Length: 68
Image (cartoon, rainbow, N blue to C red):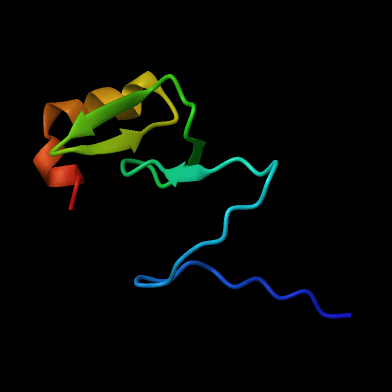
């Protein structure tokens, strides 16, 4: 049996799976982060999640640079 994983591509929808936590990508270090992380910032109406206070502080210093 072959397991196939189809990643999310721009313009594609995702299917919510019960019991599976949603993950975001920390825009500073690229680490996957749970969306219930205590480290997050909001910028231009969007929430950004971080793995640590260091990554959050880096983003907060220049959110425009890191939100693109």
